[in-house]
Length: 141
Image (cartoon, rainbow, N blue to C red; front, top):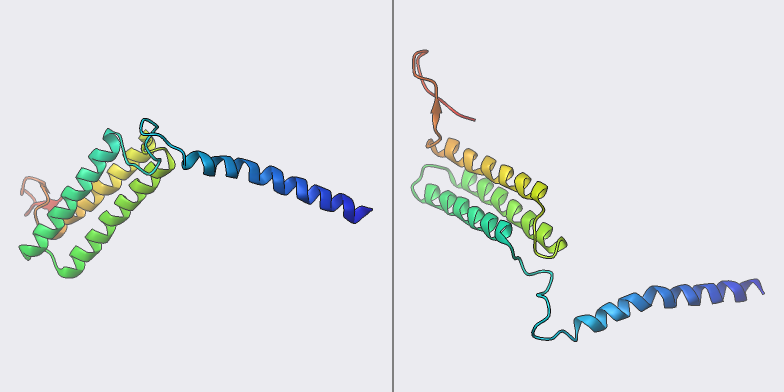
């Protein structure tokens, strides 16, 4: 008798667990032309702006490498850092229906600014601090 109860419980649990998944699967295959976009579409001004900024920093890295102001190793490291930020933005947007919440957006912008500042320091184009009174100007960062 005991095995009969556990078999019934297991069967009921399997049915209850699979019902929502079957409905979600069916709903995904019957979308009309006017339905919402898929959750992996990256929409919204934060996503578009952040991706444009990542592309701008990435282009700056490429330009600095072509001008020989940074080494290939520095360029590779900076490209990887920018790619990680882009991947994190895509992952965050995918998890939130194509949007990036404000806290994550500001964190990603801060990380991208750090990559940009590292590029400026590595290439020697970072803005300098100090007035030279103590013998020189120093990179900010």
